[in-house]
Length: 213
Length: 118
Image 1 (cartoon, rainbow over the protein chains, first blue to last red):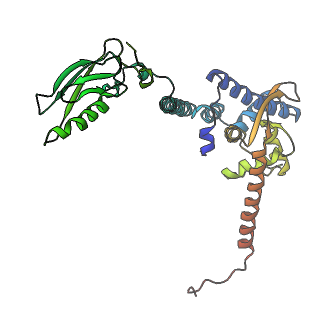
Image 2 (cartoon, rainbow over the protein chains, first blue to last red; image 1 turned 180 degrees about the vertical axis):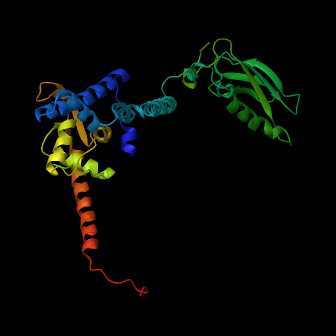
Image 3 (cartoon, each protein chain N blue to C red; image 1 turned 30 degrees about the vertical axis):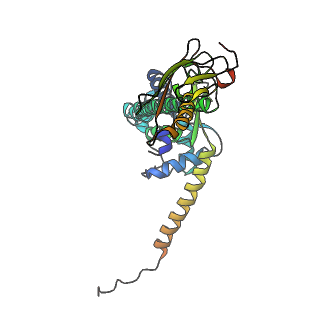
């Protein structure tokens, strides 16, 4: 059987209807031959016998026709089912991939997601007026202070006096203090700053204003 | 008239069926009669064997079937040639012509004594 025959969709009608059509078609042949025989001068009984003899085994012919029409039907239906399932799987996988790709595109395009609602990383906290700072030198215990950022944005620190800290992030402030303290020590200075905010945790740099409490 | 019954080669039956439908739609009995009459009663299809072949060719798309009414006003299944069937017919006719020509050449070839057998 050719591949095209396998790929052709099976007859969708019920098996009984297909079998009845085959029987009707074969019966027509016998009737037509009998009628022609009678027209040729045979008596009806002999005409029928001759028609049947010429035709051969009716049941065998019917079965052969049935096999042609229905023999591969089950196999074709299974192939169709398998192909349909495969198609659905491919479609599902494609949809999942498209969904993931869409999410990535949204994220890369800066569309609002849940992430901006979360507090920013601690290193990005901007020091503002009213914040409480704890400053400590890792290797030198004498350098330790705790102060609130004054209304002019300054804090009072040992050895340095008033230092402007307004608008700096915590890492920027630590770097600035390391630079300011380094001349006082021979070994490298490592300053740690802890920022405690009493009113907001995630203010942006542009929000810091003089006199802001 | 004495009937000479010849067995038809399997592929030849398809060719004869397609050819008999070239002039228009026919039911199975009409196809059998057409083959018999146009061969001068030399070729007689075993009538029952025609139908599995018809259904097979219908599945292959060479012929299409449709129920209609016969000349005796009886419900009958009529077959007609499709475009694919016309192409298949042309191909089968050419193939048959080549084959019969080759066989004819063999049969017409002069008889010569086989070497080594004296």
